[in-house]
Image (cartoon, rainbow, N blue to C red; front, top):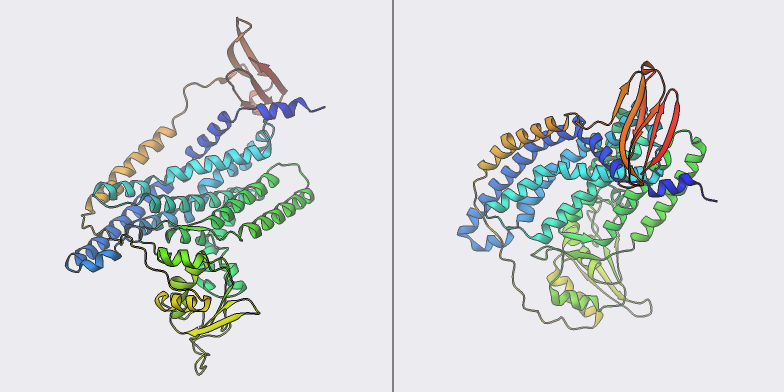
Length: 517
């Protein structure tokens, strides 16, 4: 027979718990400090981006061909959101940790787990509160986007939403890591150190092993920075989104495992091992998703439409062997202009770096260095050719020749015109350095005011809660009290629902549970 407490947990209202978590975040200093810090950081980045974009636009007035290289995504949005990324990386962990760290330090976690909610529900609500906190923190960067639109700047909805979504995923994974760190540590300071080890460690991976082949390339792909980089390029990768979602759910599940006090460490370790194994299997599965959408207006991540349609029809495997060092600029150009695009459009493409363990200096004297071998077909019928070019204009005809197909006829399409704009960004400094900080301070002051409708009070050494309700058409006034000494410290929890409500009051004198309509 199922326990009545289980049914109660299923029907417990989420709204009061969510409101409590939001109150916990907005009552702390971390959120408002981040907002105040982000204002000048984002504002100056936006002002600098507008200045540089205006200079490039002024040059394009004399040379119209330069206008095609002016994209607000690269010139305005990416630099502005980049400054917001720095603020989130360094300060947002302190905001996310507060939803759990303060309860552990104050002892409120013991009362929290007694509420009629499953642990997974508690962690899910906390993660939802962290999402709301991130949206509040994004106010400065969103106001920069609005300011760019108000001065007449062009905004592509697909590019802007994709970039915003990428930063949203980054904020959520930071929040999930922070919740996990807070669940395994005893203090907020230690949890912050653990979380910063994840975020700052991502920078270390980018600076040291990014671009290296082999298992180092796989290790570099685990960097949290890679989550944003793909979206900054205007790519909406299904595999990346699924992988980040798995990581967020994995860290949240680990936080739910380590959250309840009183559970044996051995049992927690066993559950955590199963969770990590399941997450690893899910990441391996979603890594096979290669579908990605190029949302950029200039189609910088894709071949021409006719070429993309033709390459998608080539069903046999294509193997590319590159005789270049990983740090060679020609290899970087080849990956950006040819290899990455081929991997997105062709069904069977594999790339091998023949000089993976060599550098440019050690490859001096190698006659094959710089060559790129293309093999198309099965083992029984393989055709191959060699080139030294990194341009798709020469590589694509070579691939068509190996496949035995004619190059497609170009499909007429509108060329990217570019969006030059010369605008004065001085007005933005007034908003970011004066107006917006004042509004944030006022909101901070307003959030710290005590609510005026307190329902719980102390009377005569007793902890009392008075409620009026309608029971079978009769007005009834009830008092729920837990006897005890006021100096011993009384703690109570209150949950309310529209029709059926249950209240738990815990004190030194005992525990009282009551159902009321």
